[in-house]
Length: 265
View (cartoon, rainbow, N blue to C red):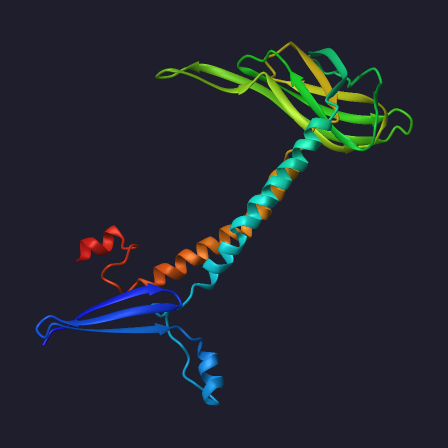
């Protein structure tokens, strides 16, 4: 005698139907998943066998966590975006220095000392925009930000500018004539720059321009905070998916069946 079995699952509940077509008979039963620890405590058992695998109506603990975070995470992301928007809108974005210079090739090429400029306010980020009309060559600038009063180096960096182009099975190009560099946490005060330049040996001279803007918004902190904020929800979602995939692993009707398993069949 053959029987047709059907299970309707909504963890932790299950509704099962056992039908016998030859007898025109159906038997329905209802069940609920109970954690092994509750069974052990209810019957006063000292020890019970360890569970193996995932039962068909076992609740997904990771899915429950994901549901709890479903409304909390959007609120936190919105608050983070609001804080960044306020920070961006309040940034001064004030240009405090702009200078044109020329690199000259030669054995004696001393660093250039600029006119002093002032950084107002509190500790803040400075954006350096460096421009040079490089064309299939390069120039590199070593910049020291010197405090005009203490003669101490507040920041130091090297930045190359290079731009190449040509034709090889079609036009191509790489690099740019403009480079940006962000220096964070610069205290207020008067500063000047020491610029040490070098360039492609084939270049006898090359003009370049340096522009500094103070109090620019920092987006790196926003993206780091956003990544940390979304890390746990993404982890819970992934674990919930793995749990459900494992639950359906032995079923012939798994929605997670891969094409490779279909080919094997």
